[in-house]
Structure formats: C-alpha cells, structure tokens
Length: 132
Length: 476
Image (cartoon, rainbow over all chains, first blue to last red; front, side, top):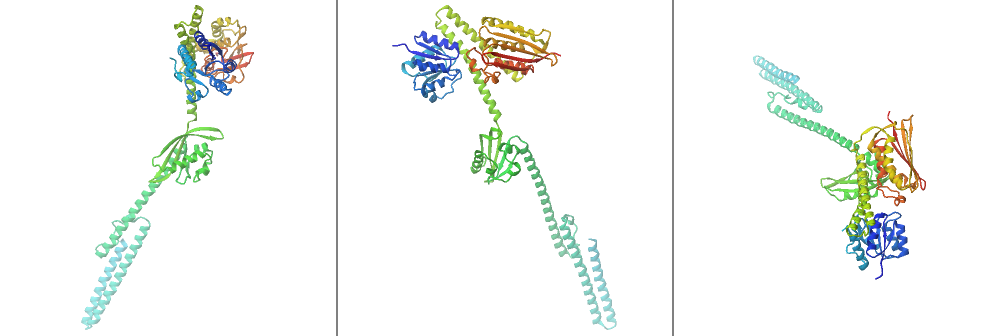
C-alpha cells in the first residue's frame, strides 16, 4: 500500500509538532501549515489524502479552508480539531467534507485511530469526539 | 312653625267667637220673638267663622308647603324630620297623612343626598386613583402603551413615545397604526386584541429600530377584558439591550477562556501521552517534551492568574496596598527578571531612568506585574538583535512621571491598535510570533488606569516597533 499523505494545519506550534510526530511514527507522510492560506495552498498543490485542521487559525479558519477546497472541486476528507467546543451543525460540516470533529484537549492515540478509520473506510466511527 | 300655630289659634278664636256671637244674637232674638233671625245670625256667624278658619288653615298649609318645597330645593329636608307641618291634634287623619308624606319625602331626599355624596366621593377617589396610576405609568422607565377595543391608543407614557418616536400629546385616541411605525408591533397588538383571551399574556423579544439604532425589548402583551368583551391591550416594553450585550459578552468571555485554557492543556495532555506511549524515542526529544509540558503549564498558570486578577480588579474586590514607591526601583526589578530572555534573543536593553528618590503612590506588586507584562511583550515581539528602551521622565510642574517601553519589534497594524488592551485580543499578524493569552495588556491597563488612576497609551509602526507608555502621579 502506498504511503498516505496527511496535511496538518494549526497555528499552535506544539500541537503541530506532536500531531506530526504521532502520524510520522505511524508511517504517514506529513505536511504542515500554520494558517488557513498555507493550508489551502498546500492542499491544492500537494493533494493530500486527509486534512487535519484547527478550527481557529490566522488568515482564515479551518472551515473556510474546507469551503474553499469544495468550491475548487477538491474533495478531500477533513478532521477538525477545535478548542471552542462544537458549534457547527453536522449537516454544515459534512457539506464541506468534514468527517469528524475532535475537541481539544485530545488524545494523539485516539486521533491516530480516527485517521486510520477515515482513510480505510472514509468515515469515522463517531462524527464528533471528545478526547478519548 | 310658630306662624302655623298662630293661624291655628286665630282660626279657633274666630270659630268660637263666631259661635258665641251667633248664640247671643239667637238668645236676643228669642226674647224679641225673632227666633228665625237669631238662628240665621248664629249660622251665618258660624259659617263666617268656619270660612275664616278654613282660610287660615289653607294659608297655613300653603306656607308650610312653600317652606317644604324651598327646603327640598335646598337639600335640607333632613332638617324637617321631627318638625310636623300640622299639629297632630288639629286634624289627626289629614295631618298624619301629610306628615307621613313629609317624612317619606325627607327620607328619600336624605338618601338621595347621601348617595350623591357617596358618588361624589367615589368619583374623587376614582379620579385620584386614575391620576396616581397615570403618574406611576408616566414615571416608570419601561414603555407602556394601552389600546382600546378599536385599536386606538388610550394611554402611553413618555418612554413609549421615545421608543417609538411619536408625539405623546397627539397620541391619545389615535389609531395605533397611525401612532406607531413598527408593523410588527402593530400586528402583535392586533393579534393580542383579536385573541379574545381573558387572562392572555404573551412575552416576546423584539427589536425596535429608530434613528438612534436598534434596541431589543422584552414585550409583555396583556389582553384586557370588560366582562366577556375585549377591552383592549396593554403592552409593556422592557429594554433588554444592555442585558443581551452583557450576556453576549459573558458568553464570549467564557468561550474565550475555555479556548485559552484548552490550548495549553491540549499540549500538556498530548505530550504526556506521547511520553507514556514511548513516542519520544531519544533523550533529546524526551527533554523537548518535558520542556513543552513545563512551558505550557506555566502558560496555563499565568492565564489563570491574569483572569483572576482582571476579574478581581473589575469587580472591585482586589485589595490595593498603595505606598510611596520608587518607580525606578520597580522597573529595575522587572528588567532584572526579563534580562535572561532578552539575552537569549540578543536583545539590548537600554535604561534611561529617573533618580530613585522620585516616588509615586502605588501598589508595588501590581505595578511590578504591569512593568513585567510590558517588558515581556517587548521581548516576545522583538526579533533577535533588537533593542528595548525603558525611559522615565518626570514632570515636576504637573507632578507626573511618564514611563515608556520602546521596542524595535514587529509593530502592531493600525487596524489592531485600538483593540490591543481588550481582553483576549491578539493581533492576528503577530499570532505566529509568540504565544500569548491576550490578557497581559488588558491587565496592564487595568492596573494603571483602574487601580492607580493613571493613563495608558500606545504608539506603533509595523516593522519598526511599538512604544507603550503610562503616566502616574508623583507623591506630594
């Protein structure tokens, strides 16, 4: 099986580092972005298999990144990390390809399991998730 | 009454006198064999006496009736009670009937007068109550609007006129759709009136737009009924704009605090789990992880301290211990603490401080915290090799001391400058430069302005740097 590429976008450098390390250790190729614009540009140019994005980021938010990708005709599943709790309707998130929302603080172990589920089956076992 | 009695006595005297004269004449006539003439004279006298007596009695009755009518007119019939028009001994049957009629009339008049007085009192009470109720309605700050079954304005207070921008003096008895220009409000009043609800009450939140902008009101609409028939609608509008703003601010604050607490906590939890799972494979990585956990724990601690300090200052619960303090000494202490961080980034610190004998009335710990926050920010947002200058100048005339902390940092974009002292506000462009809670500058402003009644200001130029300054009083 070819190596899957995951783009991780978060303006918190510590979160970006720890998630990247967890995924790399699990055998994924990881790209990183520190704001919405960079996340959009990298996704369009690199076409990763999965996007893990923070909700609140400089330039524009994680949800805007997903919206713009859909507008550009790019259908990449996304997992959203958020420290603001769940304030999005499931219909709204699924419309933009967000298959799962994970609330901060989160477990990297749980995040990895979710990533594997999404990449294998296209869906997560739970649409939204607290830290396991 | 005296005159009646006199007439009665006169009548009796006339009758008796007439009888005696007639009798004497009859006797004299008998002696003189003129029997028939004597009797005729007797009868004539008797009849004449009777006529005079009757005339006297009628005159007496007329006068009494006139007096009674006059007294009835004057509403003083009660004074007649117990004062018989005709003595009972004169004509028992007639006098009893007249006196009973008189008594009945007196009682009726008395009752009517009593009722009239009661009604008059009730009217005065009702008027007083109405005026009192109107005074209450006019005095309350809530807008009150009362309409009748024809949707005409019956009553409105000044607050209602101000809310809906209408002329209060022209509102009474005008159709509500001519007084108000708010279609939804008019519709609500009509719907309430048409609902025919006896005890109906509806509470709605509605935004009323005016020249001054929109304000949100909690409107209580009550249906007023007169028996079974609807009598109108009472609308009371309570302005909840400020309450809503405060609730939104509170929600935003909780949301912000939640976000700011979750962020360092997320790092701590993730790095701890990575260490437990053995994901940090070498000693160097492990050390990095421990440092991240330590730094994020400190960040969490600072955040909680800042939130609590701001909260205490805002609520007035903070205990302030103001003593004459040397600002120069406080600044030197803060510089000493921040110097190692500046050194790491090879940032040069310039001190241009006034002599230590200049003192300011200050809470030492708070002022130290403010200075530390400003210096910490300067170090965070100044690139490697930059300069931070700390200057104090004294204005002897104004008895003020001005402190300036000037850096050669990234600067703050003009659009962000008005908000830098707001809680949780962080200039987006500078987010990547350093971690922050967005509370440090808010706390500094509170310490300088709320606690020490000083003045805080900021100047900045993107790419060149920022200058944060504060002005405090000198001790007398």
